[in-house]
Image 1 (tube, rainbow, N blue to C red):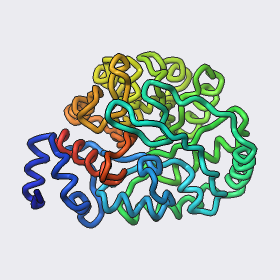
Image 2: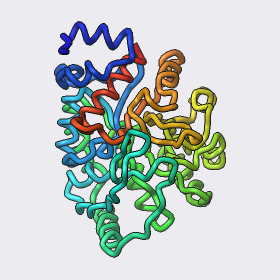
Image 3: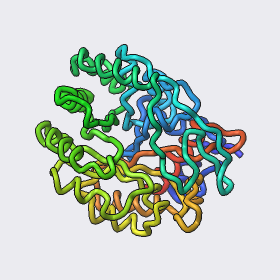
Length: 340
């Protein structure tokens, strides 16, 4: 069945069973000229390059995907932006093969449901790359990132988040460089993985965040509890929460909506994915089939006029006959309908 644009608009505004319409309608459903994924005052974005699995992940390609999919904002990993400016190319990451879980698979790089992302010892190639990359960073003025900002802004895309992990081994000048890049990009947040058990690191990051008046959103996986961010937030008013409601749910927490409501002033952005509760296996599912309260969190953001973005993070494996981009369009339709 094929829907006209008018018919699909009515469908999305009145119901969430959207998959058939989104799958059968062309990608121009959302993209009319420049993209616009602000719905009822809520900015819906996407994390790139991660969500576009098995597709070219250079900056120009990512911009083209977002434009045709109608997505007007992104939290971007540092690699595609830096590589656009001539940074060393990151070595290929290992992608272990894994079977789908609970009727819905996952990208090969994603660990089985219910398991944390175990840290791997870096290979010699990765260590050499990191050294070369840090040399490139310190030799490249942050103002150079105006070029990549222009690429995105000219296409109608706002880079609201810059994802790059800071470490204890990095010199202070690289910390300053990173926060300056965030500002040059026009982003309002630096995001990174939560450095578990390293209060000295979050304290150091918090001092630089305060210096640069730029918030840092720490992203947790299955270690997430209602108190995971408390110590970091107590260290600096700029240490904040990059909440993944899917991981939070799969970690065994049943209070995602209440957590968002309580902590909204310290949340930089919310990642959207649909996972089962821990007791139900924790699997990543197509949206609407898991236990994560995506609709309820979006409704709260709309009702209370929260200004932080909601970030699509595609983490389930596309079903046979589909691909990551088609599934992203479905996720966007789901969010739009939830916010209607």
